[in-house]
Length: 588
Ligand code: ADP
Ligand code: MG
Image (cartoon, rainbow, N blue to C red; front, side):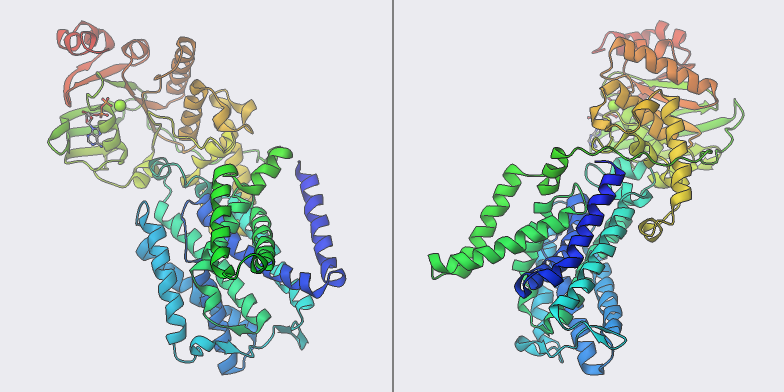
């Protein structure tokens, strides 16, 4: 499916939708209204759970906050539901920001568990709040109207609901194609890589949490003014699970998954509620069993959701992204020979083990320095200390004359140190271009709102040019629109180098770039690194493979058991008996 057929499909679907209220029976119009509202909530969950990996069992509580806020407000003040919308969104947003700030740092299963807890808490709170009508709820809520034109009828409110849903889909898909969207799509699969590119994980998580809550709050507002009645029961844990089911059923492969999932679950629910009473007197309980079975089947057979099945049947070509004529501005590399890195007495302990023991060395601009040693010597740990991925237990680190000891990874990356990983950390489902664009994160500035509103076109085109240039530099330009996961390991490693280069570093630090490469790939990599050095790049190479570094580096620092053995030229290292004993005689 290319861009124009995509637009045509969406256009025809919109046209068909506009005709629905004129042609369909009132029953189906109402059903579609519920699907539209549910799709808004599910869209938030696609963003937050499907893409961001943050599971929420409490999303219906946010729908409830939106619904109750506007119901209470419009009933007590008699003012317009549109002012109620402002209140509903503010209340949901503020409460979500507070809940998120308190719970999003929790790891593992604690976050989903805490969402169950506050989901219940909010649900039990509704009937207790004065003015919220206790368990009877609030009735006679006014309908939405614009300049005297009332949307009280289901056939009319249909257009309001689906217009809001369309707008939400447009905003969310813009966001996903933007700078912050790449960060969102990268959330699953490890935090270290994102942090090394300057992405604040907590901020991205909190923002998608609040966006999801706002979409739920908007759903609540529509719900309150459509049904004209709110009571606590639609906002308990069971509807929360249904919303989650919708997001999972639709899948995160596309934002339209939210609509598919909502449609599927609402229709199935309707169908189940129709037939179960014929089969049993205990339909309520059996309904939950039916959902559980569906959930298990989904997770078993269609992990990626319906949309991924559809996209598999109609393979999509990645749209070519517009690229500007110039890339991003580059910083001038310091003159060759400038002291770049000064490390004095670096120390790191893991419990009783001293992984890095009082190591000192320096490097100058324009050189390739190799940090070598047998397995377990402490090279990767040293590397993590320099890049800020680990806090040090002692010693001083300076970069370009500036103290960087225990600065955050983002700060260190911003100063001009870019890294790759011993175990390649790419996003295999994203294109090469998108992976490299991630590297430009700190050199660009578009926020979530700017991305959602497409205010980032110029910056995106410039960043795209930059990323394509860096891909060309490592020889991968003609595969820019392929998925990174399809590349051979050797190419994945240079893709990581391209991503690092896209951050415009002064110092490139590479952790075992030759590991797992075949001989030809190693030679190609060495050639590319030499070329980079000749272009003014300084490179610190952590390497286990002695042969690979010998012909490549200007100088070597050799480590063993956490301590520095020696520092000098490759020839000096080769003839040093200590090195021979530790290294060549050892496991290497
Ligand atoms: P190298 O990269 O030179 O192979 P590392 O820096 O990975 O060595 O490891 C140095 C030593 O520190 C090893 O003994 C390793 O087991 C230990 N080590 C590394 N990381 C950790 C950690 N996070 N916790 C505990 N021990 C660690
Ligand atoms: Mg290592």
